[in-house]
Length: 440
Image (cartoon, rainbow, N blue to C red; front, top):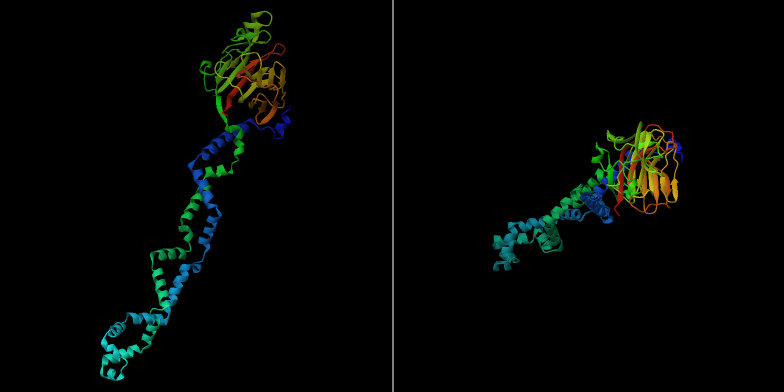
């Protein structure tokens, strides 16, 4: 697979961009999860259910847009005003409150009232004359016509109604053109709008949660930013582990061009792990397939580190940000107690990057060209019970469903020079290594 054209036309993201995307995804997922559990979102959802309901909107429309003149309160006030303005009703209440009526009604309770219709008796009594004039007056006729009538009962009932505190409050509410702003519903709506404008809730509502599906169930199980100075302070050991017990430890192989220099070729500088391959003549203990362990001369030294004693994992996501120089072999791989299987998260053979898996059935790998291994890239392995998938930055480069290991494996970083390869110096650098496990 040649990634040159992918990179040229935008298929392969730059490492800086990919790391920013990963950080942004992690930040967004943390933020989404926090907002998802927040009291503010719960309140927003509850208010959204209320505020967006048809009955709420209908009530708002009524309260906000109804004209005061269309209300019962307005009609009652208008009716009271019209009745109060009627001349006969005004005259009725003038008579009702007058002393003259009181005197007349009191007189009508006396025995002398029987002489009210007697003109001859009236000529002899100024009081009778006065009461006769009142009884025949227009004012008294209005009084007698209206007193106890339906219109007076209606008027007085309306007066009692509009003078009640309940009516006064209701009338004050409906007469206010800004009445909606004085309702509990308005306060609910305002709180809803405030919450909707909250940056975290706005982010949550605009987000597509399926973007996090692949990462939600993951938890970090191994994270090395290489902020340590000496190997004993880390989770790594500088020695081989795979194969038989005899082949586990600090030794080299006669079919390789370099001796393993223990910790001499492994260092952490400026937050990066560096495994250096140097031109250096040494004689070291080495394994020979026919002779066993021998002392063997080497012209180069290099190193290996692995986590066999401290960290192993079955399934998950394995990532490393790596770069290398020198046209020799550099690798980041997963292995177990046996010689096989070996899953190569990253392997540069001096010509191309070859991620893949080797087991008893052979090797299944991709040949990736078109990228510069001397520049940092993020190499990712997604390992599930049914498949292995490799990525360089954001781009999938290999997938395997037939040779999936079913045991916990440790991680290793190393540089080496096979006997058939022209030797030269080189450097493998790791900026970070991260592993995630699926909690489900």
